[in-house]
Length: 517
Image (cartoon, rainbow, N blue to C red):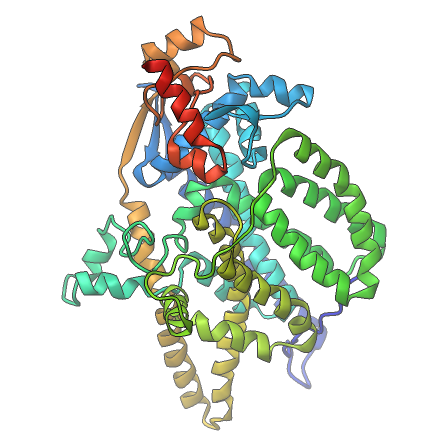
């Protein structure tokens, strides 16, 4: 079973030549290019993850980039709850997992990735390696699958490479805010490469350009790259020709099972795409039925071990500031997407019919639904849907851009045609990735915060030695509490975390206050 996608093939050889020899040469160069691409993806991913989260063996301190400080205030307690805490026992016995920031009921956050990290640390791997190796492999898999899926759809290496570039360097208008604060001058290049602050960081800076388009989102939420890679792998299985239906069904079911533990939102996105494919592709239905049967035990296990309930509320506007109307909606998304606002729909409309039929509706729903509905207590969490919308949308932007440059093929003079294509392409690509380049350097220029680990902190040592893994600590502080480093749960974690996950933090904080009173 496969979804019929007519590829846009280019001529690999000229008439009158030796087609087989030239085809072999082209394939050889393509294989070398793909091998180099895989190596670059791995090198960049490992650099990005280890650069932002590391460990000092001499001082026994965890080194956390300051732009990760907030998120890892929740991730490290969750990791340590598996490496040193009671969640390891719960996991091994199939009991419900509990949040180390709100013990006493099933966890409301996808725990699979951080359980893996905790198990690796429990087996003796140092925490930075335990965190960064799965993070880097997941992110590099995302980059590689971006190339694979886009090439499967359009059979054009330029489109595939542009897709990756558009993903790494976002197309928002944050760069214009940077230039507003740093007017063009002889020092502009130096201003960019030494900048340590994101020019736009909505909603926290009060602006309309969101903070969720930079690579910072992938260094903060380490499970996100892996979850999107699993999503793309599922789509690729449906695009590639595999003769036996049950093979695809079992593979998709297995990937879906893993995805259910890694990211609840990504699992929901997969159901959107698979549900649409089930409706429009009759010959895909048996494979998808098999995949559903295979994934069913994982679904019930996730339901048993965590609380997946989510209150869906009508709340249009996402993170828009000010008056909510059509005009402000368009301005908001143009500020956040830049030229992709036009290129994505243009690419979808001009793509081959089979591609358009497959992606147009789920892509539109993936954009509209989180603009209209809130899927968790915190509207900010809707960014996960928009991030994957852009991952797929970037493929269509790249297709549209290459198609626009082909319009110059009507110019008869080859020299002028090449010059016009090069200049136009350079200008458009610069406009599409300029903000992303500026947004990359605040990650590189970030400072590190230090967290004293067990051997370096006597308070952590005391808690680790004199308390049991199931003991709950009535905490007087929140972030990086010694009990969290020792793998012990806090009675009430940081308010924003517990509220945004959907816990009744008001009642729990009242209990904590009464204890201290």
